[in-house]
Image (cartoon, rainbow, N blue to C red; front, side):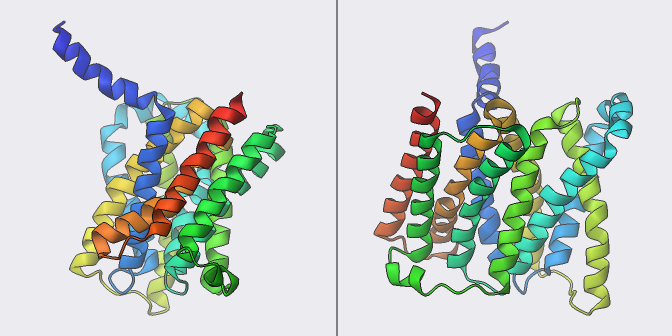
Length: 307
């Protein structure tokens, strides 16, 4: 084989085996999803965005994987309840709650509350698998949470002191709880190719989102998406619905749910950066401080914690 071609083919393989790169890609896309949830307000309704994105996935993935799905049909039938629960909690519940929360809470609150996911993951991994929580791991999580707090408060301690929990805050906490459960449980996903598992879980997410869309229509809350709404939908189908989920599940396979969960704290850092680029919001010194804290916390948990 041509050496240049061999080198070219090795790059995707190396990236697929690099958990750190995969988690950076994942959290960058999730940061974009947070911005998209704010942009979606008045452009596409929450249940429509949730349902349409999974319908889009189901129009793409089963066609591409029809042969592999047929080959793994016995495993799918044997574990369909487990797959369904993962699809409902990790895909439908989290995104629905997040999109609804964006209507009644601020970007500050959304940012800080997403930092609760690693805490739920560490506790869930300990309860489910008795995965020990080392002192350096705990310290790394605390440092990254401090970076989250700096991001959410815009570097002003008075902002944190005056934070109030509104319904959207409570919905976001519940969303984080669901996704942490998915993170812990996906470690023991049924023995089948990753793409097949994802596709079947997405199918259950699609089915579970349809009654929510029907309820939104019945209560008169639905309206057809605007042009911007359709663009947001296209992004959520390609990015958060397919690319990030696959990279996240692969990272969990490589380093486990507890260590992968630490990287979730990059979301509140990436989201403001994307907001600067997309929404034109100013980038402050506190963003740089927060980024240093989050990366420092990941280093403590990953490098020093493993030692």
